[in-house]
Length: 376
Image 1 (cartoon, rainbow, N blue to C red):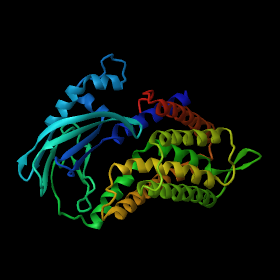
Image 2 (image 1 turned 45 degrees about the horizontal axis):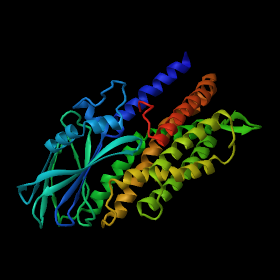
Image 3 (image 1 turned 90 degrees about the vertical axis):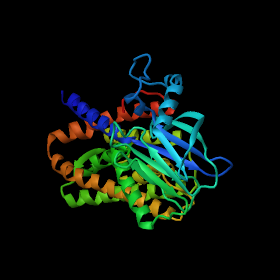
Image 4 (image 1 turned 60 degrees about the vertical axis):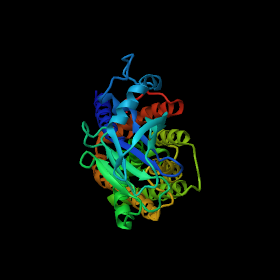
C-alpha cells in the first residue's frame, strides 16, 4: 500500500513537472541571402489544446498522426505569427515541415520564407501561438548569426517585439535572462532531479561490508553531499562549455539515453551497493553526460558569435548551480531527520530507488527507439 502511495505521489509530481517543462517555443530569423527566412519550433503536445491529433484515440500522438494533420498545423501557425519588416506586413510561405526529438519530447519545426524586401532595419514580430490559452508559455526570439542583437523572451504578458538590427544588449541583461533560464531548467529537468535525488538519499549512510550504516553527525552528511554536488557541478560545467562552444559534439539521442542510464545506475546502486566509497567520482563521471544534456537546451537559446556569449553561458550555468543547491538545501535536512526512522531505509532508500529504476528503464527505451511509453 505504501509503495502504491509513493508511486502515485511521484507520478503526480512528475506529471506536473512535465506539464511545465517544455513550454518553450523558438523563432529564429535568418537575414542572409536574397530572401529573409524564419524557423518556428514548438512542442507538438501544445497543439492538442487547439486540434485533435490522436486519430486512433489511444492516448498517444504519433509522428504519423502529426504528419496527417500537416496542413491544419501549418494554417494554425501562419495565423498566429505576424511579421512586419520596416513597417510593412510580410507574406509568409512554409517551405519545410519537420518533426524531431528534443529534451525527451516531439517538436515540430516549420521553415518560413518571408516576402519582404531587403535591406532591413527592424523586424516587428507579433507571436501568439499558444499564449491565449497558456500564459506560462515562452517564446525565444533571435536573429541567426547576429552579434548585435540579443535573444528576446516573449510570453502571454508580452506577445510583440521590435528587433532592431543595430540594437546591442547589455551584458547584465544577457546574464540575468540566462541565469533565470538555468534555474528554471534544473527545476524542470526531472531526470536531472531524480539523478540528484539518487545521490542524496544514500548520503546519510556510510557503508561497511556492503551494509548501509547511519552517519551520526549532520556535519559528516553535509561534507559527503558537498563532495558529490561539487563533483557533479564541475563535470557538467566542463561539458556544457565544451558543447556550447562547439569543441565537442555528441549525438542528442545518445546523450538522452545515457542520462536515463545514469539515473538507472545510481538507483540500482542504492539497491545493490557497488560504489560505496568516493561517490563524488561517480557523480563527476555521470555529470559529464548531464552537461551535454544541459547544452542541448542551451544550443537552442544562445547566439554563438554574440558579444554576450560568455555572459549567456556563465549566467545559464550559474543558474543551474543555484537551482541545484536550492534542491539540496530543501531536501537534505528532511533526509537527515527521516533516516532515524524505519520508514527511511525501507521506503525511501529501497522503495523510491526501485521506482526510479523502473522509470529510468522506460526512459532509456523510449529515448533509444523514439517511442512514447511514459506520460511524462
